Image 1 (cartoon, rainbow, N blue to C red):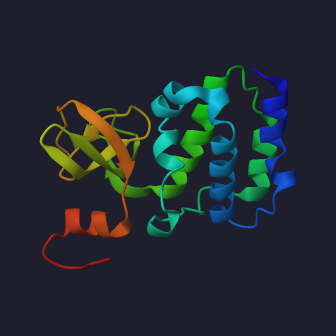
Image 2 (image 1 turned 30 degrees about the vertical axis):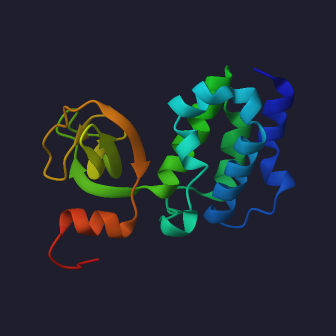
Length: 173
């Protein structure tokens, strides 16, 4: 792990005025984009950072309830990132948590996983809203049935997209 890069990441709270989850998300995007050449397209793609850094965050819910910015400073400093992939996975997990909508449903596969709404693209279907278990990664449709198609990519959903998938005939949200 490049010690200069790690120090730069750990100093993001010192070097930027982060007052909200939106500020934090924007700073993470800025940092990732500034270091793209170091990471390479492959690591950015497998950690979905290519998607997360290109989102128009005004369209997505920035979930601030899960992230306490004061604790985040300490958490970043204490984690022993052994590899670049580990650091990027941490950043990706944090950003996904901020822009996805949680569901109260349980994962049918592992039975205890937290489930969130995402969009998927696969052959013949673009932008289908599904549920993803954050623990085991299982995908299922909004009715809880396992998705078996080969997925081309994953995207966060907007509140409107979730609303339309769950209640296609009326606006409950």
